Length: 531
Image (cartoon, rainbow, N blue to C red; front, side, top):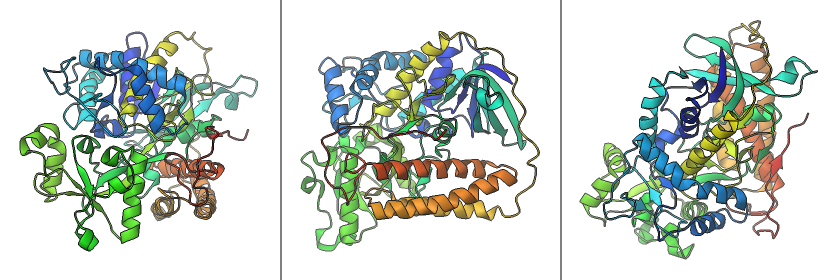
């Protein structure tokens, strides 16, 4: 199969890029599941952008830099913030049904979330990601220049110098597993874009969908690209705590509209007491890393399995208008948020680091781009400011499209088919499920919200053992989606732990009991693959 551009991933970054390119290029989108299975479709809160005259680019930049704890790239932050309004206007042109407010300047309701000094979050009730993705999906499926390969799992990108050592290194395509037909296809592409999202599934508890296995980060690393700031994994403070609720996030917008964090009944005499005022002067509107650590502290101090998030003081009509999805989902589990608090726990939510790129999405390997949560642009620093992620997807999606359109056509290259000599069926597939479970459990126990060097070293030792076992398995048996994802997860786990060991301080999302102070120097952690 031959295309001008191959896009791996079907979140907002990948879909917006495809629509920008499809007027001039033949594009293929490779999606591990159905088109809307990714994390973008789950996003509740909204998209941060300067849309009101009472706000300014400088205020949005300042809020981002403060949340990023000194590690944001200021030039990258300014570029993305200053292109925010045009990104939102493009979505409105596509027909995204943002929540209206006739009294507002732009005609749309703007909410406020933790870390923001102004109301600047444009949203579609409490299901913004779904509204955006459904709108773009309709155009993607009907566009004659876009080929959609659902239930296809990328294996690795193809380097020209691996095919012919005399050739300069360049990405010339990608090997992809057709999951339904159990075969591997070769896709040749002039340009390949990694838009596979983050790596939340490396942890036992996460708000991410099952597809968030760090595929793009691992593939780029194996292809020789640098990776940055992988120690900074954002844990969302409030995910629904219920034995039958899988990965349901309770939007930060609730706290933006007055929800309060309180101790639950299990706290005894302290039950119903607010605890955020004791941790930060911004209380419930402190940045996510501070709120997550505060919840983690209270749970461990008091032996709790959750805390409460209470918005029952707001009128039912207000909650029905602004949070219909959360209301409905909680009711499925017998929780009426108009009368009782929501039990919540922190969970792995966002990968602030990723593949090192410039402001056009270019990686270290010519012909290979990375955008969205897969990439490290410098915007998020040591902690992502709420609702900046979808903004980055949109702005960098358009920037990458503009760069790709300007590239000359590379020399033709004949790509070999996937080596089908590896046809042996695995005799112990239970090994994969056991390794998957072990990896996620020790990452949660040793490399989550609070860390120590001893815990990190324990995790690294186990990663080395698992990696040997997984590499041997990969080399001898027929590949499956579970095996490919496990292979990528263990690679990403190694990057997270090695990055965390390299940072001898506590900053933003990386909190170490061994190094509780924050250093004066502000240097990102950049890892380079061995040649």
